[in-house]
Image (cartoon, rainbow, N blue to C red; front, side, top):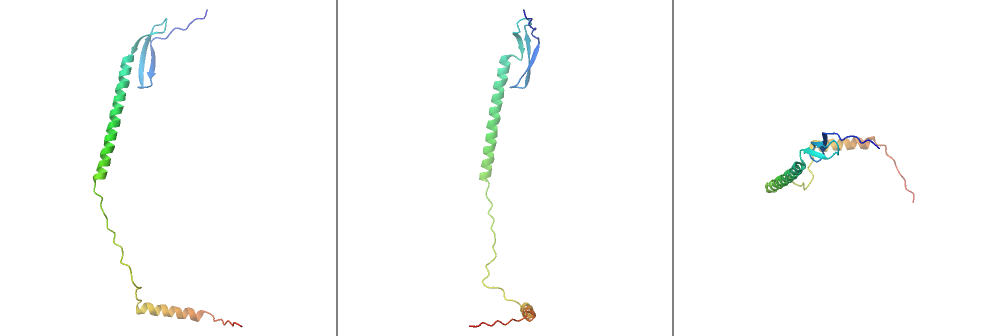
Length: 122
């Protein structure tokens, strides 16, 4: 004959759905639950209450999102006008000083270049 270990009374476990500690008082001979705190009907009521609260939170979140979208749509859009520069029809005329500086630079470049003569025989 094998000896059976006695059931431990009281027994505490955690209801993972509510993160609540549940105390069970058991019969030491059979292991049957004699009393439970909170009771099974109370745990069921907590589950229903949590489901109702979650549904309300979801409805409030949807309503808040809907109001935000309505506010965004109802706000007038500000139009910004961008002024573009007028197109130039002709290049600006250089000043006398700019023209003289360009001519001087061109003459210097031409004078410093060695000249090469190419003959083409036909």
